[in-house]
Amino acid sequence: MKKLINKVAVAALTMTLATVSGQAIAKDSSKPIVIPVHNWASQVVMAHVIGLMFEGMGNNVEFVPADSQGVYESIRNGDVTISHEVWQSSFGASFYNAMDKGGIMDAGDHEALAIEEIGVPTWVIDQNLCPGLPSWEALANCQDVFATTDSGGKGRILEGPSSWHGDVFPNRIKGLGLDDKYMVKFAGTGDALWAELAAAKLEGRGTIIFNWSPNWTDAEGFTFLEFPPYYEGCRISEGGTMETTGCGSMLGWLKKAAHYQMPKRWPAAYKAFSKLSFTTTDIGQMAALVSVDGMTYEDAAAKWFAEHQDVIAKFTQ
Ligand code: TMO
Image (cartoon, rainbow, N blue to C red; front, side, top):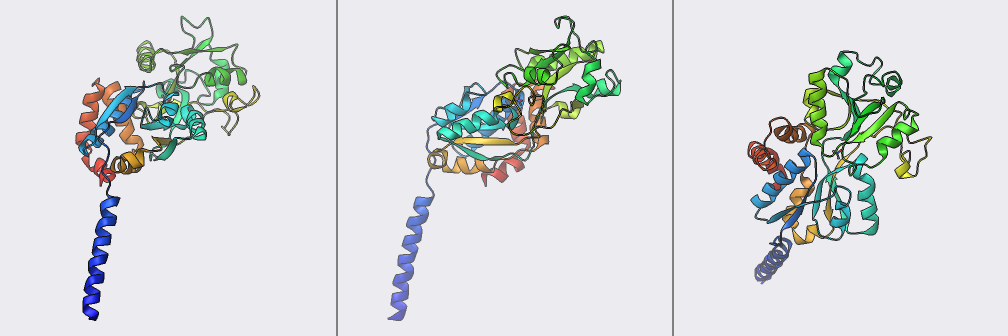
C-alpha cells in the first residue's frame, strides 16, 4: 500500500512538473523583433549581428531607421523592441526620461565602458602641435593650429550630427570661456568625422573632433582631451549653469534597453539579449569592418557573426 501511494505520488508529481515546465517554456512570438538602426557604424553592424543571433534562434526580425534620441520613446510604446547601444553621455537622459513614463526596461550593460569626448588623433600630440594637450587648458594658446577655412579665424571643433547630443559641446566651450577662440561645427554624418581625420593627417594639420570609444580609432591612436571632471547635474541639459557646464564627459556605461513586454513576448530572445555583452575589442572590430575595411554593414555583421560563434553561444545557451 505504501508503495502504491508512493507510485501515485510520483506520478502526480511527474505530471505536475511536466505541466509546470510545459508552461515555463513558452514559445517566442513569431512577430518580428524590431531593431533600430542609427547613424554610426558599430551600432548598425551590431544591429545586424543581433538580428542574425535572433534569426538563428528561430525568431523574426525587422530593422527600422530611428532617431537616436527619439528611439527610447518608440521602445516605450512598443514600436521598437530593443536598443543595443545606449551610450550614457549621449542618451542616458532620454533613456531615463522614457523609463519615468513607463514601458522601457534596462536590459543590462555591455562589458565595454563608454567614452564620448572631443579629442585629437594621437599624432597631433606626438608632434607637439599644441603643447600641453591633452589638458583642455592648452587649447587657449592653439586656436590657429585648429583653424580651418570655414571657422572664421577661430579654432574648429568638429562635432558629430546634432542628433547625438545637441548643445553639450557648444555649451562646454562657452562654459570654459573658450568661445571667443573656438567654434563648434556639426558634421552632417558620422563618416564626415573620419573624412576629417584622414584629410588632417594628409595635410599634416591639427584637428579636434568628437569621437568615442569603443570605436575603430582605439586601434589607430586617438587621445581624448581632459576637461574638469563630470558630475551629475553639471551640464545645462541636466539643470547646470554656465558656471558648471564646462565639465567633461563621464567614463560611462554602455547599456541595452528593451520594451517592457519583450520578456513575455519573446522570452528566449530576451534571455539571450539580456546576457548579450560585447567588449571594447568586439565593438571596435564591428566599427572597423565598415569604417576601415569599407564593408557594407550587412557583410560586416555576417563576417563578425561567423567568426565569433563562441561569443554568441554564450548568450544563446
Ligand atoms: C553615440 N555615439 C557613440 C555616436 O557617441
